[in-house]
Image 1: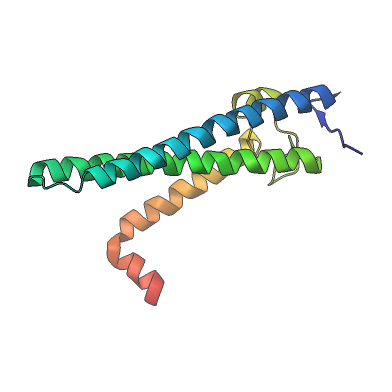
Image 2 (image 1 turned 90 degrees about the horizontal axis):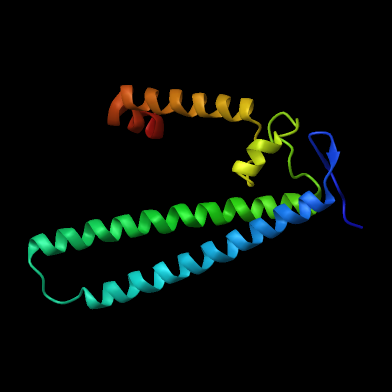
Amino acid sequence: MAMTKRIKGRTTRSRRDQVKRVLDDRRRSLAQDVHGRIRDTRADSIAGREVVDEGESSEIDIQGDIDFALIQMKAETLNSIDTALHRIEEGHYGYCFECGGEIAEARLRALPFAVRCRDCEEVRERSDHRERSSVQRRGPSGFLDDLYG
């Protein structure tokens, strides 16, 4: 039996089905894009084995790094979509991982794979920012101290 949950006070079986369709469509589109980019990157890598000067080689490396970053970001989004689809099936969609409260419908419309409510996401982002700032202030030696200290 499929579970339905309430998002902002109303039963949402049709809303859940609509979100599931949107996520499935987005997942399919992203997966095609990622696979296409991987194919293109491999083809470019094979074609790029020609002898090129140092400037061209550097440009090729930079473009490869950009392509890899795009593929990585899209793969992370695919993972987020898979998590959202799993949460829909389990009946946990629309509820915050951190506090268990409802995620605002407007937030879910804007970011259908959101796993935290706005307040919990802000707390997480501030914490991440403090952690990055702390690492930057300590510099590379502080990082090594953490690893080997």
